[in-house]
Image (cartoon, rainbow, N blue to C red; front, side):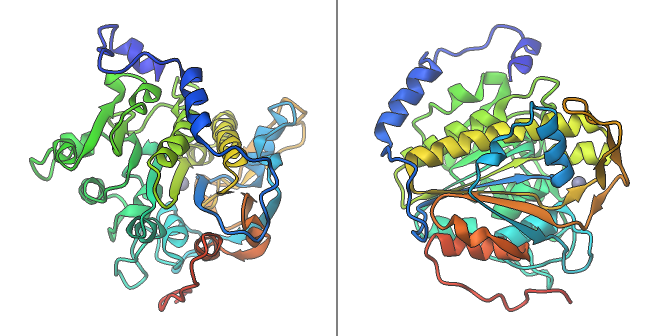
Length: 389
Ligand SMILES: [Zn+2]
């Protein structure tokens, strides 16, 4: 978030934060980590899950990023791949809210629903279940943290744009790590006078924002709960200076691991890939997908060293009906878009780590929920209201 720092001048007070070099920090953190070789056993259950969602990231988006990056992506390192069907309960074309709720609750719901079933009842999310079972939890996004995808894992609202209601839900959800934009929904609210950030401090949160310094410094906190707000509304694009997603995933995994709970569940979203699809900007899609892929690399590095972490990468849907048109060359992709919204094409799933083989095949988006639970050794639950209606 260097750009923000420059915009805000140089008088930032870092005296409360020890000046430890990032490399030193990682060396320290690694030394507390059980280092294993890559040979985790297939079929073994996972202790931790890092779930990475590229919003709107279909195969064309991945391919365009690949061909724009010297024909290399971290996504190539995954050992197991599948495809999932993204449709929601009321529309072949899902939105991000129903898509994220399918992953979070294992149920198809209507577009706009955040953590709610098709019958508008709150559904218990995998994050909430694991939190109750003693796991550490984290949510990271490059949109506001009250945006549909992160919101669906820890809040329950019938309509996704009720951002202030979502912020209020999130403020007492006790998620250990929250990173994203949207500060104004917490401390300058229209619908009431509450300052949710003050309330969160009282609940034990270390509250930090981009105005107070880099995320990497905020994450040195000794607190068991941290919210880092990376903007008043949506954070910048990667091209405009946002750089926290790979750092947040890398340090977030260490942060949650260091809490030494039963395990951890970390969801991180590359939120703005979708926006390139909506606006028909191929370059934005490529830059945001490469940023997301860098975060994927950080998650894989952690999982390789840890040996007990499942990494799952997918998208909630494809955005833009994107194509790589004739005239494209390696390093010079001519992207075209068929539509300014989402499409119903299947999207890929990538998995690495214990039980990654569960993610092979072709299945519904709701199966991601069931497969993550199975990977953690939890018995299957059958949702009463699953499926289309
Ligand atoms: Zn979208």
